[in-house]
Image 1: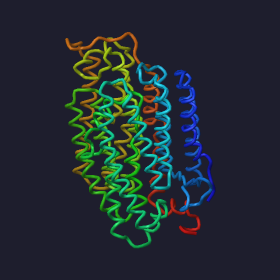
Image 2: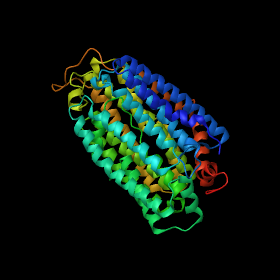
Image 3: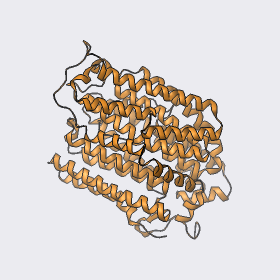
Length: 496
């Protein structure tokens, strides 16, 4: 097994950047520069690794040169590296946003180090080949994001952070129980070795129960209905530049395509059912909510529901649709969260309540209104944006599966998405100010970072549509054969 140092570089770069940023705690501008530079270097590592994985197959790195299963191994297959590339790209947007943001919390010495540590946790979770290390990286991500929420400018930030810790601790409990059950059964936590045993050997009852516990853990991390409670508070109070890319969907994909392939037929109907409920609940919640950021939080429930339904259908086209949807949605929602943060930054109270910001758009740059509209159209799946490609790919998967009832529900939910996004845009930018509309400031956060992400959304829906579909198709082809992952980690077979 050859060691690819690009894997190590993808993790070490943001970790070193966090340490260096902490050393220069007295200079906030230098910290932000270090953050952006670190993000760019990590992105270059990620792009290089993505190219190698696509051209040469699965890449690995054994930490300390301890071969698995005795040591921890980093594994970059097409699924893991695609998600890692997505994380690194969005993190650059978040770091760029901090340069011209007016949030007081972004001037704290701990902000940039915590942001980079969150990136370490996210990327590490995508690239680890060991379940316990996956747990460590996921908890690092949670602790960093919760800390960033706790120090946010919002007066209820600490309360939202405590609420998120509560729900996250439930996911942590399920994750630890599932990991402990697997270790008690197989004596290893290496994912490739466990997958090999479950593919070819007996299936102990404890292993079956561990699959349920791990599934619950990843559903909790994804904030899927009915694991969603308290999530809107967290999303609404989080600092604007905090873009937490969900690792739960990635974990679920690993469960059904690698660890518990033979149990996938049991999990998939439940995933589809939870996905449809989430779509309905999230869409209706977004229509009824009173806050722009909270609307996006409820929208996330619905969008994750779309992804779960695609995974639940289980066919090749459905998996392609689910992964394309997850990839594109990350860029769309990140841009919209930033844009709503920009809207709030123009108010003296930094509010995003519709009652306070109705008609406020007339006092803001006209470009902001256009970007919010374009982001909303992309989320709703209107061409030529990447949201259209996502929904089209998912519809093709639904046609392949023959699940016409759920397919009709999803199309209807797409119309609801268009309704609440256009309505929000009209209330903020087209309506006359109300008596309750708050006072505004002359200057708000910069539009540069969300503009970049909107451009990415447009490019993914036009110029890069075919390359993205080809890349995801190759990814699905690879993950549908778990022996490719296993043989990359154990070229001579597990235990050899």
